[in-house]
Image 1 (cartoon, rainbow, N blue to C red):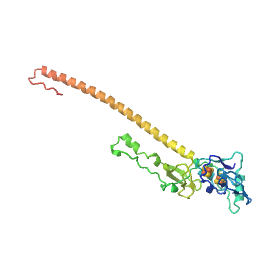
Image 2 (tube, rainbow, N blue to C red):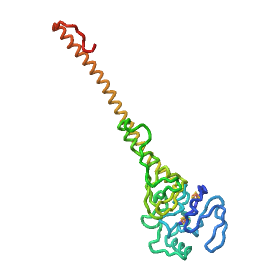
Image 3 (cartoon, rainbow, N blue to C red):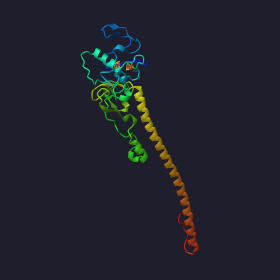
Length: 275
Ligand code: SF4
Ligand code: SF4
């Protein structure tokens, strides 16, 4: 089925340059039909896809490139236009008569392909995102020196901050693996694969699923730490009560010994052990 753009489009333009078939046009802009004629825009409000030019990226990528870069997940399969891989690769050949497509052409229909969802295939890198490297920064959280912290707090501080977590990604174009600090995985941020330079824009779904997983991780361990501290405090409180009771008992016991010593007739002044 062809891909189409829903009215959730925010007109960011990220998808247009990614299409290998120039099937995407800005709202209100005429499109070039396959017969060379100019045709009226399909949408005047949002970016739109010309169905007769869309191959769902069959012949070029393992997933739909427009869907991979769309920050709001509004490039979706059109259930009203179901098309087979054979139809789509034939269209790709028609649109690109000078290009040779081997038997192993990329396709979202092939086993292990990305399936059209940027979240599954993943792709990105920093470049435009501000120069962050492809390696996560595993720096401890800022704060009091680790040496002054309790062992529990020091352990938690040794975990990278959420923004510094390296998110593992795989470029859907070149299959290159790399990592991007989570702080750059924001919807609408244009990232680039360090291997092939291909662009990628994290979408909302991807961002939210990673953020949710990281937050759950931190919440879980923070709660665990809180419980440990509570248990430890309770143990310390119990220990203090026992210690005071023991000390009181000891004082009384020694006082009795002291009294006994006096009664035994020792001719000396009783000063007591505790003043
Ligand atoms: S699915 Fe691929 S071919 Fe179709 S509009 Fe999107 S980028 Fe272009
Ligand atoms: S990437 Fe998505 S939101 Fe941006 S113009 Fe294309 S369809 Fe619209």
